[in-house]
Image (cartoon, rainbow, N blue to C red; front, top):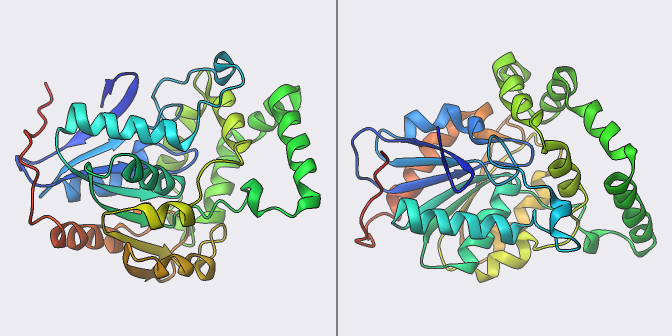
Amino acid sequence: MWKWRGYTIRYQHCGTSGPALVLIHGFGANSDHWRKNILVLAKSHRVYSIDLIGYGYSDKPNPRQFGSTSFYTFETWAAQLNQFCEEVVKDEAFFICNSIGGVVGLQAAVMEPKICKGIMLLNISLRMLHITKQPWYGKPFIRSFQNLLRNTAVGQYFFKSVATPEAVRNILCQCYHDTSQVTEELVQSILRPGLELGAAEVFLEFICYSGGPLPEELLPQVKCPVLIAWGDKDPWEPLELGRAYQNFDSVEDFVVLPNVGHCPQDEAPNLVNPLVESFVARHSSSTSGLPTATIS
């Protein structure tokens, strides 16, 4: 694990100069959420797992220092991702994404189409709490609730109530269909960085982020191939709603993962890793010719 511009990165390869993969976690998670994938995929790929700014062990700038300008946005994270590929990976890359990480990957591919060779979306966030998806009569309530969380002690109390081993375990047991995969190692890998200084402010800022792009707005703009895989037991992002995304021209396939919840890469790596390898293999025939990265 190392840091680049304040962002924590995990990098793994086994002497290969194969295609570069950048693994992008979901909300509240970090690069450790890919621990069951990195070593397997690194046998034939250069694998980078990045902690988005504000998450994991990356720096956590206080959002209040930016005034009324939102900092923790998909545009911010997408710019980080593209800059990382340009300065460190120094090559085109495949983005392998879970949950909100999928929106980050799509936004990055829209902003810099030449960088991304393909995107795999694992249970991408539908962003059901987006302000445009709320009924007109609910919008004032949402804004009032966001203001309460951001600007009063209620928000800090709420964060403290969820930043405990018991709460993290309960949340994971909701989104994992096979709860035997919710181990103490997993709980601690999610919880520990969430207790770092500044994590509460980032958490509250994001749960109050009800704007920004939607997957259905980004998918028509993406130029690279997209594969979507969906755990069919996801209680947060319903499969039947996700199926609508297979109708976009950029989506080459929509794969249903049976008896899997919201985080397939961790709950069912035996299903996800071969999917990643086959998807990358199909689209790796051409290379950019740029120099590959070296880490000292």
